[in-house]
Picture 1: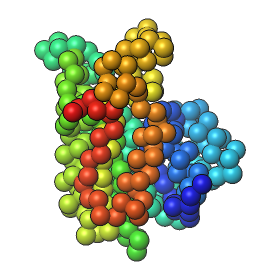
Picture 2 (picture 1 turned 90 degrees about the horizontal axis):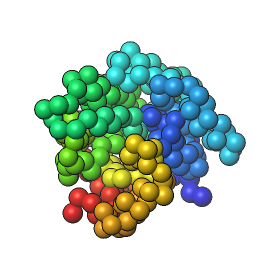
Picture 3 (picture 1 turned 90 degrees about the vertical axis):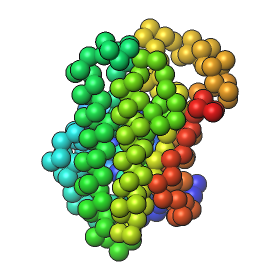
Picture 4 (picture 1 turned 30 degrees about the vertical axis):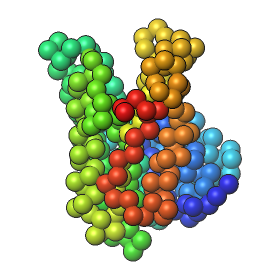
Length: 254
């Protein structure tokens, strides 16, 4: 076990499951105080219990990041409990698969923009405003997707647009605030072993069979593998990386 984040505070949105939970656990294992954020209390409490059961320190905070007041309150809660906000991972996102663009429901379009784009925008604002007041600044990693800026899939035009926007927003914000001591990067996962990658009615075994031939790597990424990349981008080891978008998709976008 390393201690790259010992004494630092790491905020992770969407921390109740999947990549978010794996990332929260990984930060705690490397010494960080973790703030686990999301919309539902029970999964967040489970994440915190896992961290505390391994000797770490964590705080669960319910928040809807599509609301500016919630984003600001989330950052305040982190600082009030642990004294600073050193790392933020904006991972919360939704996927609404609805077929061809012309037939896609407007409500699903707006839901994805609200969480995937506006949520990242509002979280970035609150996080940067805190980090730029700190002598040590901070690091932010936004979770986009290989679907968007890197590749496209039929029926996912709205999701692709929202995640491409995360990449563009992140790179622009990185230029705006690197001189404030805030370093912003992006990770773009492809198919990962989470509930989001399961098709309706599909089992995990059926999913594994489907991706074996579909992906050059022949398998899904594990959430812990994506978390490891996020920790690298957030660490001092990645200090020269500004606006970098790291694609983790088993070669799907090549």
